[in-house]
Length: 254
Image 1 (cartoon, helix red, strand yellow):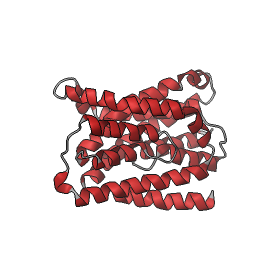
Image 2 (cartoon, rainbow, N blue to C red):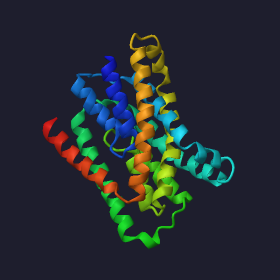
Image 3 (tube, helix red, strand yellow):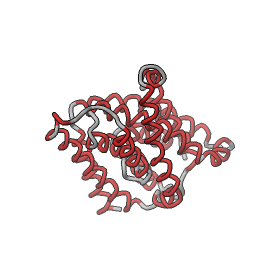
Image 4 (cartoon, one colour):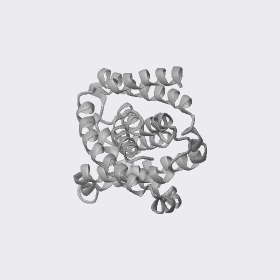
């Protein structure tokens, strides 16, 4: 891996981890274009660490509120993390193989696109009935969606925000719950893959790993702020259209 490739992959991670267009799906495609055939688990840990730092910085006030004014939200986040962990552990081995099969990723992009368009339509037609609050039921639904997003091509942020909205949570609240829920998920993913990090630390590619992580963090801070504006204006369908177009191209060309 070259430094330029590390920057590109870090940029893709930071942009697509937060935009609802599947970071894992895009990394599969980019790695395929670079001719990288094997999953780069150590590098993936660094990219996720960069994304995690971006979330912690951007949502620092929300995180503080979890331990002061919104302690009940901690219970909902814990409950939502249970189906995420169960599904993630069940699918972990099968999913790693999918990182070398871009064609299947294309079909998963299609699912993401349908979810995003569906969430926009739901909001448009049921504006008055949306309660705007997180409860146990919609927390579990959101957590299940996050677990399924381990599959490349299904966007974590897209699946959780869309499922949150369609289960009755207000748009901005669904956005914030989605990213707070990503914190234990990202930490869990890093811990599961931690046994591979020794190879990364001893690798000559360490400068590439660090550069990729920093790029992912900086790009992530930008993209999450843009996504909030998109969610507030109920324009998630733009990303949905992008995913469906991308899915069509991937299915036809790869």
